[in-house]
Length: 69
Image (cartoon, rainbow, N blue to C red; front, side, top):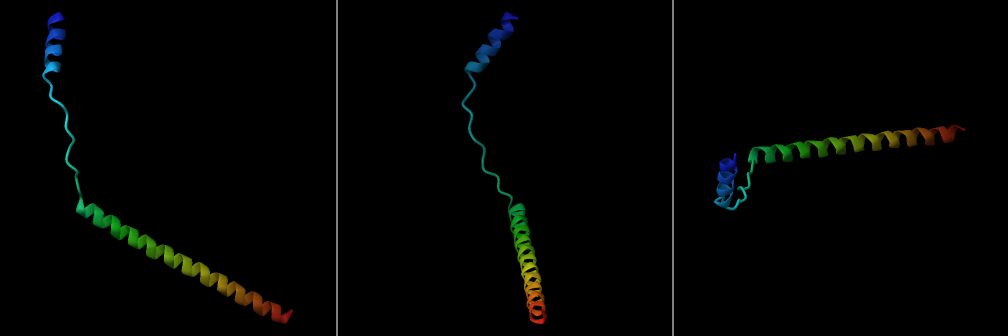
């Protein structure tokens, strides 16, 4: 038991310092993320346009109703 602890202590004395790893870049994943973001922006814009068109139609119907009453 004492030999094991002494061996581990000696090994710890000779361990060098740790160094950081290199940065990993995945161009395929980056490109796919850009494509997905672009698709989401287009979808959000389409949804906003449809909502605005719905409000404009409701306003037109409201104005027509006001004329008759």
